[in-house]
Image (cartoon, rainbow, N blue to C red; front, side, top):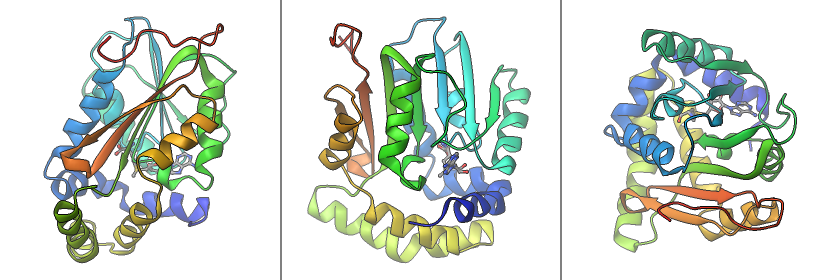
Length: 240
Ligand SMILES: C[S@@+](CC[C@H](N)C(=O)[O-])C[C@H]1O[C@@H](n2cnc3c(N)ncnc32)[C@H](O)[C@@H]1O
């Protein structure tokens, strides 16, 4: 695992070309995945949502309006600047916070939902991050984690592996002028826990048993988890 300062520096370096590279490297699927994440959460119109590792802010722009409060948090100032400009162009009110995901500058139990897209893998201590998300969620609140995974189906896993190992670093380097972040992306996806292993972390952090939804055949997965309400029950869930 790279150090937090190295990760921040890496994202500061590629910020200007981050969106364009993302959309090309995923053939536009990244936008659809974030929309799926945002719309899977059963939120009321006055809900307070925190997007951790918000990057260029796309996840928060995917939620249907209105929402009570949108907060985007990241430790890369260059990424936040990009996010701020994008939200202003689209006239969406978002509070941007420059901070570390492992030390959220919020009181306990203030958010109805916490989302994190392609960010958990980058934290120095992902289980500690999940505990921090649990802390700031109100009882009954939702956590959505969107993360790359390795497909379970052998042939598709082989094809995706070929893409990750051979194409991604070259294309990423070409699109951003920096190859190292895409070598890191490849390594971090392969080393990160997938599916039930990540669900186990969620359970250990205190969340209720979760649903997982593979996207694009398992290239990415959406994990939904809920903080139990005060009586320890699960509230209304996805599609219920
Ligand atoms: C791969 S990007 C994902 C950005 C965005 N969520 C998206 O879907 O495109 C990861 C982001 O996490 C941020 N990040 C990584 N570790 C962090 C930490 N410990 N605290 C806050 N932000 C962090 C990086 O600065 C970067 O903007």
